[in-house]
Structures are given as structure tokens and as C-alpha cells.
Amino acid sequence: MGLYEETGERLRRGMEGGRAETLKVIASVVLSRLRADGGRLRKMMERYRRIKEGAVGRLEELVGLAKDSLRAVGCEVFEARRGGEAVDYLLKQMGDERVVVKSKSNTLKELDLVERLEERGVEVVETDLGDRIIQLAGEEPLHPVGPAVHLTLEEVARALSREVGRELPPDVEEIIKASRLRLRERILEAKVGLTGANAIAAEEGAVGLVENEGNISLITRLPEKHLAVAGIEKIVPTLEDAATVMKTCEAFLTVTGAYHSFIRGPSRTADVMGIEQFGMHGAKEVHVVLLDGWRREAVRMGLEEVLYCCNCGACLSVCPVLLEAAQAFSSRVGAGPVGVVRTWFVLGPEEAVRAGLFACTGCGACREICPGSIDFPSIIERLRAEACERGLVLPPHISVAENIRKTGNPFGERRPQP
Ligand code: SF4
Ligand code: SF4
Image 1 (cartoon, rainbow, N blue to C red):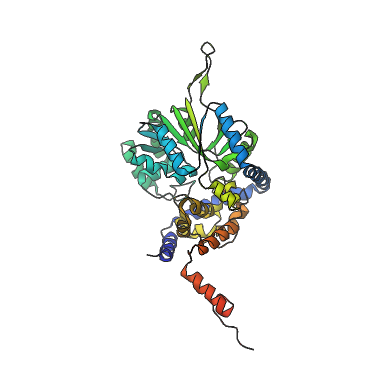
Image 2: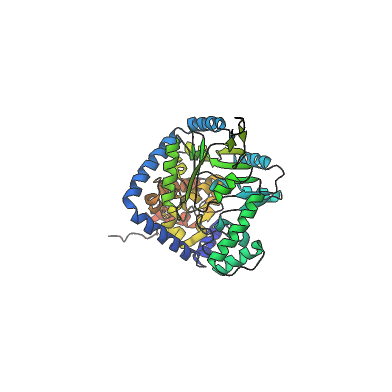
């Protein structure tokens, strides 16, 4: 099957199977909350955009400042130019550990780290309940924020029964209670916790994290080692800026976050004879991987707005293509407009076409709702032009171009002679 047929097939499959219907339900919940908050959100969006514009505008300076500040508070910092370097560093830090507990992270998806760890025989335990259900059910996630919402109660109970070692009834409370107990056991047995980061405060050397379940608090405190991976676009100048970014992102999430935390190095105490020791209740070692990957390339191409994304997922609730074609407008690195643009950089132009680069209608709804007001229609148009220059042209484009050349209109209709 050629690229064109494959893209069409993905779109057709995406429109079947009821997944798009589930996405519409999530969208209606998010949109009604955002509408109710209208004026307040507008102001937050303006502040958020100013912070991100300023931060990306002084990216190199802030990366340097963040590295110094994080080291000053006791973190180990590794700057990775490419994803492979980040993976190698993380694998080295994992040592001989056979279990790692992990939270949701788009940056980790980009690295394909879970597959690399599993190849080495390391068990990766997702600790976000939705992600854990998907992992145990062997399913594809539907929505980045609600990955398992398309599964029925019976399907969820079946997937988790194997994990908890007894047959769970299709009952929400029972399922959550059993999962909580089992996940706690897994978290207590792990020596390494793996997370992303919602923001990094350059001046204070702080890693900001937002969560709703409380799993991130546990996996950053209980295991001895905390490995945090952050794209360099997560760096903002100050703790106040980081708090604004996290607050704004949270306001646009499908589920509001119950916890906001900042981590400034390993847990420590000096309560015994005033001698400072690391690793009291929290992690003894905190490693922060600052990943470039494709981000500097995006800035070089003049597409730095992509770096304003905080992964809130609000654009997914308004994108007509995603709402009709579900996963057909996505790849393993993300869904919707931001997913397609990241796919371009992480997996390459051909994969971006497969993920729906040419499916976008250019309606601009994503730009309107995005806290960073990212101009995706223009970014996608620019990448489409690049794709065409690389020969990634779909057959209908050729016939439209020929029609315009021959008749002056895309439909090939000749004007009636007067
Ligand atoms: S501009 Fe494209 S990506 Fe954005 S909402 Fe419209 S169809 Fe979706
Ligand atoms: S592009 Fe904007 S709306 Fe979409 S996930 Fe990122 S920040 Fe949220």
C-alpha cells in the first residue's frame, strides 16, 4: 500500500469504531468548563503566551542558567542534544534495576524509552491509572489525558484482574481500590521513578510537576532515584513564571490537577549533628535530563511557536479532523495538530504525512483555544510546502495543480465562453 492509500485507510478506520464519538464526549466536558471560565482564561492565555515567548526568545541563556541552578540544588543534570543520548543516559542511570515506575510524559513518548527498557528486560510500570489500564489491556490510548476512557467497565475489570490476581467485578470503586493497592506495592518495590516535567524554573533550579492522581508525588518521593526528562522548551525564567505556566496548563486540561509541586534537588536532612545527608523521605538522587531533540531545529526553521505547547490537550477538543477521525490524526508521539508537527520533527516528514499532515482543514479552531495561541494552520501549511518539495505529494494534489494550470480552477472546469 502506498503512502496515499495508507493515509486514506487510516482516516477511514479512524472514522469507524466509535472512538471519535468518545472523543466528542470528552470535548464537550472540556469545552463547557472552558466556556464557563471565559474571561479569566483569556487573561491567563495572554500571560502564558508572554512568558513562553520571552523564554523561547532567550532559550540558550535559560538553558545555561537552569543547568547551573539545578546543579546548585544538588541535581545531576544531563543535556541531551539528541533523543538517543537521553536514552543512553537514562539506561545508564537505571543500572541493574529491573522495575521502573513511570508517570505520563510526552517527552518520554518521543524517546521511545519504554520499548528500549523492555528490550533490556526492565519492567516499566505506568502509574497513571488510565495509562496502566492501557498497558495491561494491550490497547492503543485514545486521548493523551484520558487514554482509557473508550474501554468499557468490563474490559477495564478484565485487564486489571490479571494484575491484582483476582477477578474484579465491573465496579468503578472496586476497580480503583484494587488498582491503588497494587500500584502502591509496585511503587514501593521500585528503586527508580521516571517522570517528565511541566516546567523548569531556571533561576531557582526547580522542576515543576502537575498531577491529579497523586502518583507523581509518590514516584518522585518513594524510590531512591528520580529521573526527570524535560524538553528545553519547558524552561522559563522564574518559579513565578513556572507556577503561571502550570496553573494555565491545568486550567485547559481535561481533568484539573489536584497537586502542583516543585522539586529542588534530592531530599535532605541535617538533623543529626548538623551533618547534611541526602535521602530522607524523598529521592536520594534527582537527575534532570534537558532534551533538545528537535527543538532548536524548530526555532531555526522559524517555527518556535510549537515550543509554547504545554500538552494541555485543549486543541484536541476542538479539532474537527481529530473529532471525526480519532487516532488517524496522530502518531505514537502525539495527537492532533501538535502531535502531527512533533511527528514531523521526531519521526520525519513521511510519518507526518501518515499522521495526517494533509488532513488538517486549516480552520484555526486549535489556535483559538490554545493557551499559547499557537498558529498551527500556518505551521502546518509551511510543513506541507516542505513535504511537497521533498516529493511527498499525494495524487489529488497533482490533479488539483494540473487543473489550476490548465483551467485556472482546482476543479478543472472551464469558464463558459461569453
Ligand atoms: S486548523 Fe487543522 S489542526 Fe487546527 S483545529 Fe483546524 S483542522 Fe484541526
Ligand atoms: S497546542 Fe496548545 S492547546 Fe494543544 S496541547 Fe499544546 S498548549 Fe494545549
